[in-house]
Image (cartoon, rainbow, N blue to C red; front, side, top):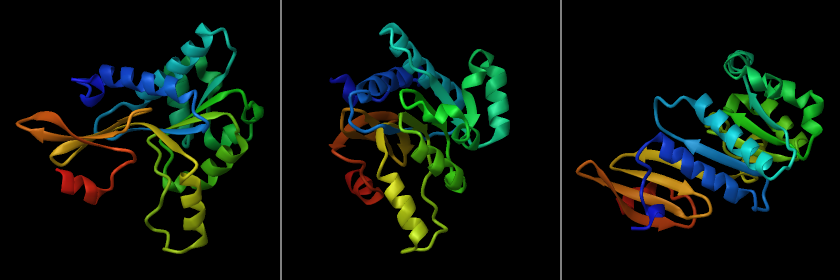
Length: 215
């Protein structure tokens, strides 16, 4: 069976798949990418630093000098990350802090943003608009269900969402799982007797109704 149609057996295998998707995305015309691991108990800092290492190692091996930065919404999260990864603490910022730093103008740099939430939008969007380099966002939640339909703010958020391209997605769902590893299609798996069997592939992320019909 094609390995592209098999779910990863553990996190290490998933992170290897993630590395392949990130390297493939470097040839994409877009410069804003989302990465999503949607299951409980995951230590997101481990995933974030893995993304950092993938990018830093790739360009170091090619002898291309690129700074890689990591941003968080919360100063407390920044402090913890700077403590745990003290060798790169100068490269870790809040969204607001990065936006106000000279680093935001380094358009040849790479930015990793950790878990932006709907309530972060007013600090996250200005940073994104100002930074013109390659930008990876881990588990972003851009849309806000509390904003009324047809409002100017909702339209602004929707337009912002459209500027992002997903390159990795992994989520268990009821009776199945959904996976995307760029540049491959989206893959739907059905759970049968505690085994996940490939069910169907899609050009774009299937909505909940499509998933329900196919499971």
